[in-house]
Image (cartoon, rainbow, N blue to C red; front, side, top):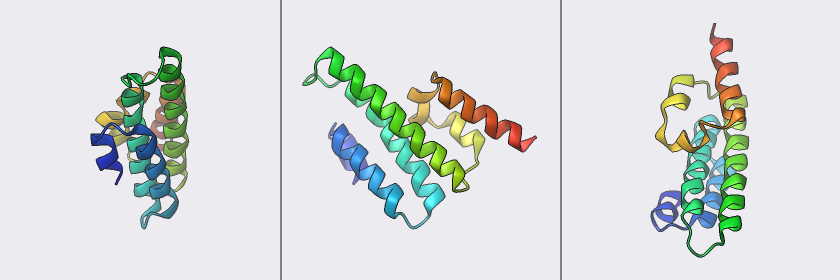
Length: 113
């Protein structure tokens, strides 16, 4: 369902469905990681949503970034630790400049050493 909502540009519904996936998925680490990716994709959709004011676009994008990072941290706690995938996943690209994202990546890389 998330992909369908994303393709339709329905970022609110996509993010909500993603969080449901994280809550009820069959493979918690992977499903929660996927949910983080879906929510991260909502960032660009919110930034381009012409039905929102500029302030609303910025606020929505920031909220999606926070939600995506929360899910990503949760996925790591559940055992998702593929730092190479996290660093290279195009879905997570909107999070790359975030200090929180960089910190999480650094923690994962340091844990592997």
